[in-house]
Length: 406
Ligand SMILES: Nc1nc2c(c(=O)[nH]1)N[C@H]1C(S)=C(S)[C@@H](COP(=O)(O)O)O[C@H]1N2
Ligand SMILES: [Mo]
Image 1 (cartoon, helix red, strand yellow):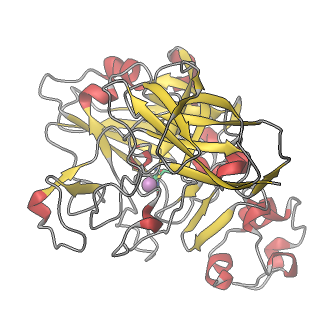
Image 2 (tube, rainbow, N blue to C red; image 1 turned 30 degrees about the horizontal axis):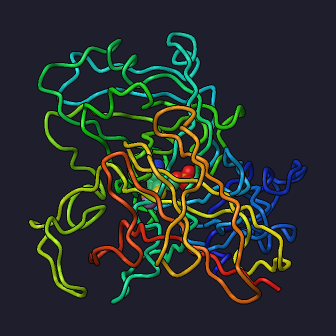
């Protein structure tokens, strides 16, 4: 890992915030000097993450959870995956932060300060499942380039903000609006200020949903820096790449948004199933919208030892993009027979749902517990990898844990 490049570009203020204390003679430090206390910036400390989180990349920072870390009903910051495409913005001054709404389909563009947004519009709170489109990529074969996410690029935190719909109504949009695209304050890895690391968006119908928020708080506190402080778009149930962090502009478009990572093969899968390893023309790639049904066993940790004769209560979460999960089952015989788990309703639309089941094992030995969710359209998770695609998106195969009865 190359920590040097990362530290050298940092401002005095962000060095001080990582150290947790003012650098008293900071102004006298030689240009480019790295204080000893920062020689090995610790991402776990810097982002307030649990030590068991896994760093997949440090330039840009990408970090995922392990299944057993996601056992909380509402994901706390320390277990929330980080997916960055560029450099985290530095020296954020909340009092000067603004959001501009512009684009072909606004009557007049308008700029709001953060405090105006907070005071002018009603506040709403939802638990929203955010899953990276590439979650599960590591299992595809032939392998797909990109962060090798296993199962941990999913979170369901509680987000508070104003509705994008209310703000768009205040600005006034024209009848030809079809899409919104976000712009943000993170910077391109190349250092080129004209390039954006990512600028995605959603169709206007998704933008106008109740749950689509311009969020300023997560789990009742300011959004942590890595997750988009001080303002973030949150579009639950869709690839989390549509939930722009460090949000400073939204363009209301009269065509599909054409920002960075909207075109080509980004966040797209072949419109028709293809054989593994196929080359697919960009023209035959379709954009990912609602995420597929999926679930995760978050207790116990895979590898658990259970005393013979004791039953085991497993629990976890299931989600299905814009749909609800209607059935949750488990198998201990490699999928031959399935048994019902108890499944809770979501606390609100687009939140994940909690399941549990008490399992008895017939005798001592090695078992696997497999979990399978079915969505409200009757579609279930596949037992093995779903359709191969060049970028390794949408792996919603059943999650499994190993258990030994001893
Ligand atoms: N501005 C900005 N927003 C962004 C990104 C980014 O790199 N920059 N990454 C996106 C992607 S691909 C994902 S999966 C989610 C990750 O959100 P998290 O880091 O809060 O978990 O943020 C999305 N929003
Ligand atoms: Mo992502």
